[in-house]
Image 1 (cartoon, rainbow, N blue to C red):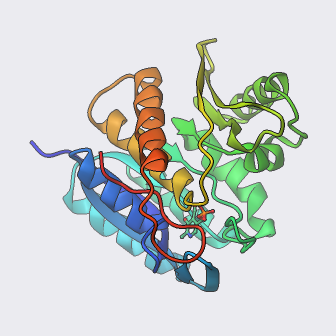
Image 2: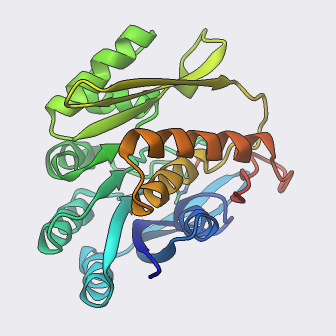
Image 3: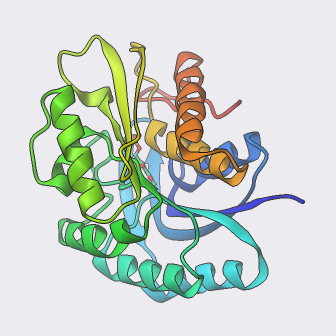
Length: 261
Ligand code: PLP
């Protein structure tokens, strides 16, 4: 039977990130994608030109409609924008019996636009992290959530420990933003002491828009396929590395990665 995943995220009119990246990635990896939109963004490869959040009740209604009619194998969250939306998403997930949950704690777009209000960080920490199977922060997001600066691989480990102490079952700290590292090193950790370092050649390209969304969507799809979490992280890393290596050359700014397997 076809497996179903739900993404709760924002729309990127440019098609490289957000809901669009998630659904394309799910499709490529053989998972039927459903969606609950949190916000609409007017966006292209040059940046975010506007953000219009949906009311929390509209987000919840989409979730409830999907949960009522589909057997959802896993949920992924992306741009959640506000504390009100986060509270409703957390309640909706509890109502659905706490499904497998991949949290991409999206905060700020590469161009600087805020996709999570500052007031919502605490809600992300308190209401979403404890529900998550795995959370996938990049370095700036991990710094905000763990409340520390990250300057080294050791700091990444400490941030991972802190995030697990906040209640997530496991974490992937993505090291792509770490200054001074020759390779892109990501760290997977879980609460039982499993630890996997993933290292890949750093690809020099401007076409990296949507990499975080695509990585976490691929991770969700591998979990839906029944892969264990460590193997799913390795599969998602391979998927995003290939996606970045094989950019599409679209747009005049930071172009999208491709979403083809
Ligand atoms: N727009 C939306 C709706 C997103 O969810 C995200 C990423 O998570 C972005 C934009 C940011 O994409 P990037 O920072 O990769 O350009």
